[in-house]
Amino acid sequence: MKTKLAIVLLFFCAFSGFAQLKTYTFPEAEKLEKQNPKPVFVFVHTSWCKYCKMMENSTFKNPEVVQLLNDNFYFVSLDAEQKAPITFKNKTFRYKPKGQNSGVNELAEELGTIDGALTYPTFSILGKDNTILLQISEYTDAKTMIGLLKEAAAFR
Image (cartoon, rainbow, N blue to C red):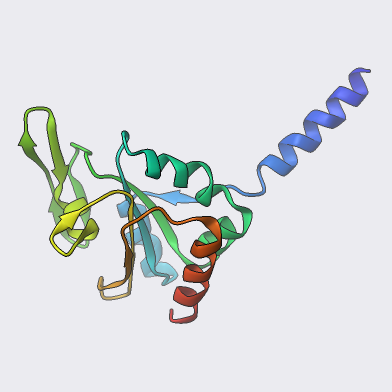
């Protein structure tokens, strides 16, 4: 009985690790990008955003999405309300209070604003010269994300 349990646990652990999304900080992605150039995929989210959580729990756990992201991009998860400064591409981005107990990091504002509005979730794919190659501001399911990632990977 113990042997069967051990085999089941080993099997579960082995396969649960197959679809692990590699997540980097901005400094890590910047350093790795110099060694092995790839676009940076930035997921701009908040802790209270229902659709952000849905993407974290479904889209970014889809094995094909994970493989495409790991193989072709440096994935960075950016909490838009992060208060700690972020240094990226020789610039420091700071938290800007917007009212009582609310605010946004300048980098989230820069990467997540579309048509003058910052909405969640948003993801941006940054090219070599830090231009935004693709920016989507809505919940994106796995099937749609796979198509977008394949298209973006073809242009890298």
